[in-house]
Image 1 (cartoon, rainbow, N blue to C red):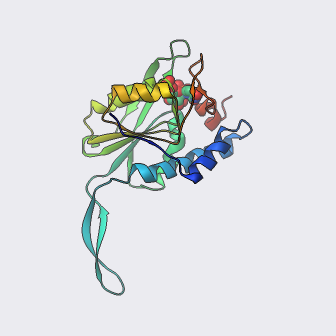
Image 2 (cartoon, helix red, strand yellow; image 1 turned 90 degrees about the vertical axis):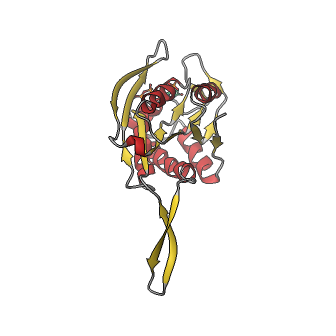
Length: 209
Ligand code: PRP
Ligand code: URA
C-alpha cells in the first residue's frame, strides 16, 4: 500500500483555511499555494539521501552532510501545478523542472494530455509530481504513468486537497508512489469537484473565472 501523509501542521492548516475561502482573491491565493507547497515539500524531502563531507568552519574542520547524488525533478501538472513550483524551488533551487499538460474533459472527467517535456536525465532523479487537486485521480494517474515510462528512481505525489475517491484510485494505480497532501476532504460532487474543496484551482490561481 502507498505511503500517504496528510499534513496536519498548524501553519499548513491555517493557510489552507484562507485558501478555501471564496473571498480570497487570485494574488493571495497564488501566494498561499506557493507557501503551502514549500511546507509540504519540507516533509516530502525528509528522506533524501545524505553524504558526509568535511567543512572548514572559522573554528575547526567539521564532518557535515550534504544531499547525495543527482537530486530532484519537480513535475507540475499544468495548469494548476504551476502554482506550486516557486514554493518547492525555494527549498530545492537546483532541482530540474519538467511539465505535463493535462486537462479534464468536463463531460467524461477523463484526462486529456496536450504537453509533456521532462528533464533528459530524469532516470537519475527522484521525481515529485505537483498538482494542488487530486479529485478523481485521473490526471495524477496519467501523469505518473507518463513519467514512469522514462524510468525515474522514485516518484512522489504532492497535492494540497485530495478527495477520498482520487486518493484510493491513485494508491491502487501506483502503490509505489508516496502521496503528500494537506487535506483529505469529504467527497466529489456530480461535476467531479472536491467537496468542500476550494473550487477550480487553475481558475483561482490564474484569475480565469
Ligand atoms: C484540475 C487539477 C488537476 C485535475 C484534478 O485541472 O489541477 O489537474 O483537475 O482532477 P482529477 O483528479 O479528476 O483528474 P484541470 O483539468 O481543471 O485543468 P487546469 O489545471 O488546466 O485548469
Ligand atoms: N479540479 C479542481 O481544480 N478542483 C476540483 O475540485 C476538482 C478538480
